[in-house]
Amino acid sequence: MRYRTGTALAAALLLGALPASAESDPDMSARHVAAAEAAAGQQLAHVLGHCEKIGKPFTIPHDKGHEMLKRLVGKGDVRSTAIFDNLVFLGTSWTTTWAIPTSDGIILIDALNNEDEAERFIEGGLREVGLDPADIKKIVVSHAHGDHYGGAAYLKEKYSAEIIMSDTDWQELEKDELQFDDPLWGRPPERDVSVADGDTVTLGDTTITLLETPGHTPGTLSTIVPLTDDGTAHKAIIWGGNGLNFGPNAAQFVQMIDSQRRLAAMAGEEGFDVFLSNHKTLDATYTKLDAMESGADGNPFVIGADQVERTFTAMSHCVAAQLASFDPEAVPTH
Image (cartoon, rainbow, N blue to C red; front, top):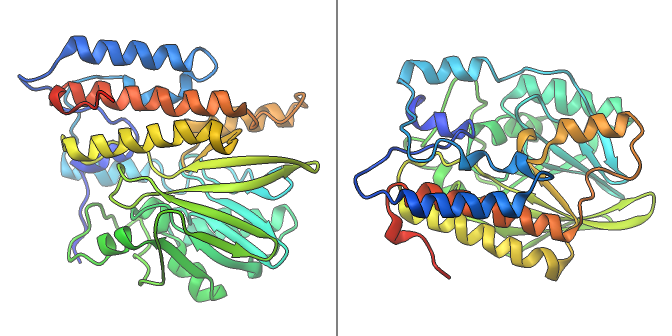
């Protein structure tokens, strides 16, 4: 399996601008940007990253991709924080792992970049909040990119934890050449537990629901997590992948738009009042942690179903704006 870094990695860093073409429709892009900004308002401006650099080329020479990762991997202080009774933030300054303590062990959502990060931020972070890493029983990997599976094989070997991923993305990891790879990432785990859209994972007193939300990868998983905050019930949706790192592939753009629209509709139906991501910028994790630490009233991670719906609506319009920059006829009108 060969290492592959560079051009495609750029968008994996959440910048996501796409090359312009003669078939671009700037007016359509502008309409979608305006719709995204209207949906987001000031409260949700942090979700508008894909509304930037519409239609402008964004490429990185192959020898630059690894250098970019060197500036991101392993960086940041350990800020492990219990943000709900049953949810702990264990992220770096770039990538996030969420830990869900249950009555029979811990479920992890994602496993960071590599063994070193897993040791420092996951194992060390769990200990900081009084949890035992030996209780890790299940690891849900949101998608087949190294910044999310990188520490999984290490944790499985050490704690015999199950690794759970969509069958679609297991297939991605089994290809002769990965779409993205870098020596800073841990090696891909071997196929373990496969899931499909709507499957549930139960550990002790907790059941989470996994939704296939293709776009970022063919089998990206987003996760519904029941939460409590001082005994009050909440429901989180953890968005599984947001980067436009697959080039001008209209079909994948449409998949992402459809996935975002699906979750926007589900927000009210299912009562999602917490939006989380596996990269801290998209859900403003650090800003909210700062608010918690300063004694803000209420839990800043609880934003209500209306804001969760607006989050996905805004993001879908930003992706549509990018799609209109190279294939406007493919932009969904429904």
